[in-house]
Length: 317
Image (cartoon, rainbow, N blue to C red):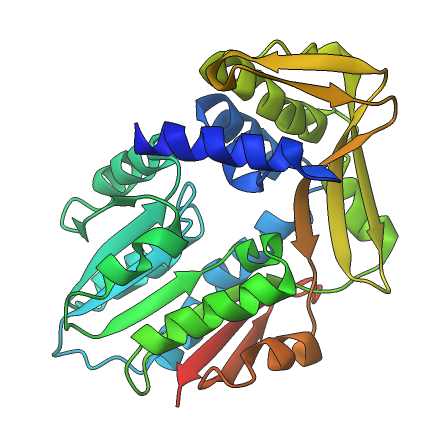
């Protein structure tokens, strides 16, 4: 019920704002999860395979970079866990080396958590797993109640869905919870040319379009809205100089949408945009700027073979 109330409030706030927006958090209902799985399989979507290569081929160096005491139990916390296809390589190696740990996947989507929990239980029957549902901003405090050493995973370039100001606050919040020498593994998509980046958000099969439009369908289903999805189109953009991919839904005509749960109507002008997502791309300088004052510093950097993606090991000073 609380999640529905938050969704309702955020939709009201976003559609009342000028320009209109809605958080990309709400992409991930059951239909959205299924569409995103298809996106990750599209040839244009390089992000997943690039980071998967790092986890698959550099597992040993990743584990060494954690500097874990093999005789001490620790907690491996993954924020925005998704389907776990990358993390499974790490879990497999840790279990084979007889490390003592509990895996705690965190995701806003209960459907994703159910999928990853079942997947990991099937793959690793002896794995200790404790899934936590919620927005990781909101559940972060609860995750650090235990005094056991922790390693945080925040991969998939999920940080890029936050504007730089919010990303800086988020990294500070994590750093404030970590003890000295504890690690954050941060996966970031690197700045590249438009011809590589833009197709990842505008695939030829139209899956990303459907993924964005599902936001409106979700508002229809859950909040009783009367969006005519055929009167909106998906509009992505990216400039290498800014290094931020953006996705919008554009109203193709002047129209009024009523949301029953709000008892409220919203006006959309012809060609008016709703921002649905930002996806920041990074380099070392941008990350250094975000880390200023956080007590986190870059200890290691792992790259895929094409240097499209980086997994940074950040340590609390």
